Every structure is written in structure tokens, then in C-alpha cells.
Figure 1: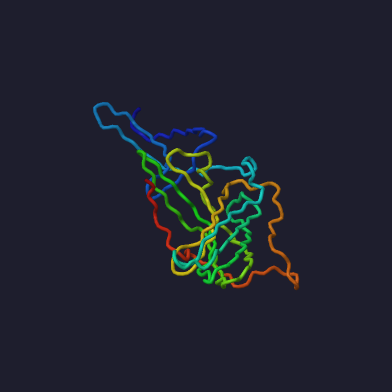
Figure 2: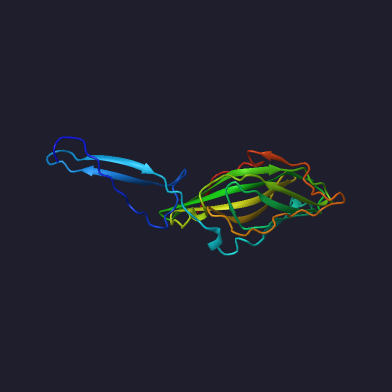
Length: 251
């Protein structure tokens, strides 16, 4: 190759199923193209360019993404010697599969049979990332979207209905096609604090995809009241959860 400037147009067809590009605290999935020029008696010249793979996950190919899902949790309020009664929360979602910019309608049935109020109530969409390497595992949870509600008083049985509006675009569940070292999942999780100790947590796993369901069910969960409207009072958007989610190391 003589002196001068040369252009070499090229294309490379990527495999149909690749894990989405991702970068976390303990691992990453990167893709790059590298050009190397072999120079006799000299160090080879190399140029590298990173590019992004969006990743794909069609919700229409995933089982049960069109069905309603629920999660139930119960906690006994009070201390070991002074239990004051159970508090139960049941979270119901109309669908299991979602894509970015959609709203997630939800219904939470809360039954407080204790003598303590249930405080710091919130519901959020979390990204759960599990990193695996050398027989060790680390897990992190990140809040993507959250909403909070009022306290539930002792003896109160109530229902909270609302929506997580315009959920963010993010990498698909399992990074689209799965990755052995990095597992990405999504949870819609209810949280409440019954007194000074413990917590009430009711998680529901959902599937985040890149291709929406072709035929969505009616996602209205509300039961009309006397005035024909759904109860949505006392809710407000929050950027951070009411509790601190810290990194968990699993042994």
C-alpha cells in the first residue's frame, strides 16, 4: 500500500440475538470494531470504536406477558413480646409485559389488623442487576420510577389505585437474549414501614421489552365510586424510595 489516503467501506451483519449493551458497577457488556494495520518491523497501528447494541425483546413472544400478575406479603407488627397483629398488602398489575414510556396501572389492597399505622408507603419500578463471576454474586437494585401514598391507620382496610406514568426506556429484561454473567430483571415493589422495626415488601416481577404487545387488555384497575370516578388522592411522584436500597452480597 503506497502513501496516500484510503477508504475501505465495509459492513458486518451482527447475529440476530445479542445481549444489549450495558454498564454496571461490577460488570459491563461492550461491543467495538477494531481495525489493525500490519506494519513490518514496526508496531501495528490499531483503531478501535465502541458502538451500542440496543437489544431486542418482543413481548408477544414471551409467555404470559398479557396476563395480570400479583404479589402478596404479610408482616406481624410490633416486637417479639408485643405483637399487635398482621398487616397484609396485595399488589395487582393488569399486565406482565411493558415497554418504555408506557404507564403501569396498579392496585394495592392493604389490610392493617394491627395497632400500629403503616407509614412511608410507596410503590416503585426497580431494576435488579445480578453480577456473577468466579462463584461470587453481587446484586444491586436501582429505582427507576416511584410514587408514594398516605399512612394506613390501625384497623383500616383500604385500596390504593394509581399509575406509574411514563416509565423510562431501559435495557430489556435479561438484556434481551440472556447473559450468563449479568442478569437484569425488573420489579414493581410495594413498601411500607409498620412501626419502628421491619418492613412490608410485596414485589411483582414484570418483563420489560422493546416491542409492545399487539393487543393490550384494558389496564383500568379502578372501581368507580359513588361519583363514578377512581380514587387517586394522596399520591405524589418521588425520585427516591422511602428506604435506602443498598448493595447485597450473596454468599
